[in-house]
Image (cartoon, rainbow, N blue to C red; front, side, top):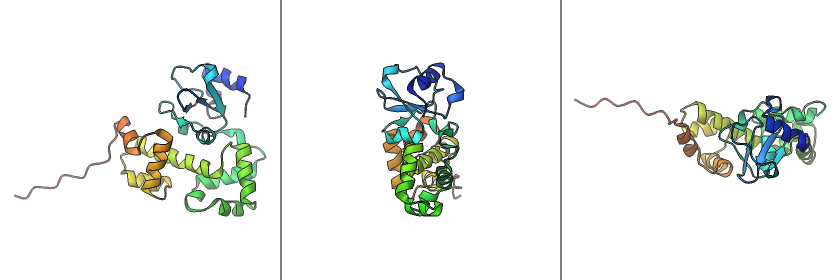
Length: 199
């Protein structure tokens, strides 16, 4: 993770080279953003920096609806020699924790689950489960923003095991239901074709 002054300078300049490298969390709003977010800059004393979206969410922050941090370029901070984390992240992105456990993921990588969790906290700033949840919500948010699919289809395509967990994740993270977020974007689910009236 970069030091505070480097992050702060990049945020104040809205430097696109740092987009996805860190995320800015604002204590007064409870929201986290990309460094390129166009909203009014918060005071420096009110911000913290996190290496990943998952780490900001783990600390209790919600994603900004304006800059959509789920669309930021993927954080490169974990790359390099951290091949175990890299392989785990690819498996998580492919849905390994949507249908399996951290123990099974770790066994497939040849490490113990506790060791894998330590590596994630060290390099990502969040647990494998939190990372999987962040990716699920990001997939669902993209489908909400870009399609008119029914909410149940979005939930299952994004990797949620139930509509209940889908709704709970959105309420916890955004403070709104998926349907409430969709209404703010002006997208509504497709309507059934009108039935011919009997003559």
